[in-house]
Length: 103
Image (cartoon, rainbow, N blue to C red):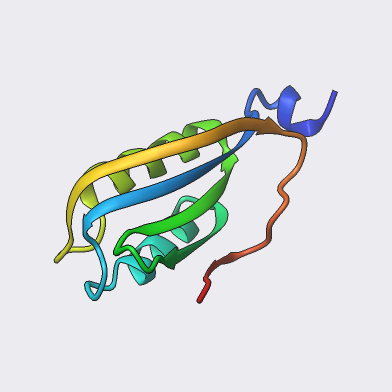
């Protein structure tokens, strides 16, 4: 049994895509900041179609908090119309390190 299971905190990974007014409003910077605040790892980037995509990994409860933040809060000037989450899966260990913006 891994230390994560014994602590009752399974690790999960989830991909996200956020729709709405989410580019040019520091969405990536705030996402990075929130991910780090929650102790998650991941990445975030803008798409050509005007959405923001990324992946977050960490303890399941923290990832759930991040999903709520991505769906409802975002950066102060953003207007989120829809958040889509996919490929949620349990992982044995973190596959990423840090939280960064990709270009």
